[in-house]
Image 1 (cartoon, one colour):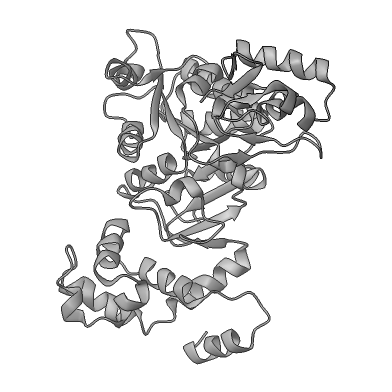
Image 2 (tube, rainbow, N blue to C red):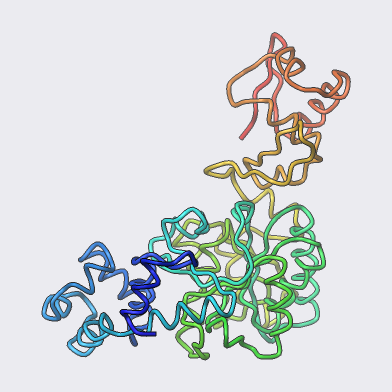
Length: 390
């Protein structure tokens, strides 16, 4: 499609068309050799992608990591139709493009310093995916590792957590399948393009994930596997998540890259122990020795994760009850328990006021408050007062 014809569509079009910034991000994304680090360097200097393409090649060469060859490629790309063609293919294949800074971009991911400027997605990203946990590990896992990944992912999924992983063989695939078996949501982060599923035998699994969550990547549609892309995508796996669980990582495992990204991003790092003499779990045991949280089940995960920066709304239990989660461990509560908990604030309030605010009969509210106190989520104060514990 020529640039002139595309501009005509932008001016005329009732069809869905991208804004100029999306096209510029696509254009930069398609420049050979310009990965996330160089994109960040360019934006730090020029501020916007359009300013990058407006810059003189001599100025581009002054940016860290941008040589004369890359500067020429960027200058050439601004007159190319490759971005328009890529966008058109996305429309034809049902692929959405989500720009960082827009409402649909994952909130957790937007917090990291090197978040992708543009996400290719198939499926849906939903607000409840802010309650996400990553599970990664060895491609050549043992039966024990696969079983633990499926069990923990299934339990977390049933509780309402979104499970994030990398669609790889072994632990990743087991985590995705466990989440699907739990009837919940899962997100697969690809190192390749969405039209080049890797490994190819997981094409069916990818389709099922897209129907119950999303598959996402930052690479162009037809990007084929390349060694450097796998460590690069690991920052997205951890960036989407509140924490990362490592299951069966050897000392040179790529899963440890994800753990390092998680540490740098301020995410919780957790690990499932293996048999003490298992070579498959040496990297996991090193993480535990160095302070990672030991995980045996979903309850351990909830105890390890702290309060959320912002509350997340989950599926309503009824039209009358507010269901807002402020800490992942609240997902272990029943609908009634969560609804009553949301009436208690961090500032002391009277039990009588709570009883007036809820349609639930008083005896049930009082019994529920006792359960919440036993679970260390509320505290009774003198004078019939209550306070929410964080």
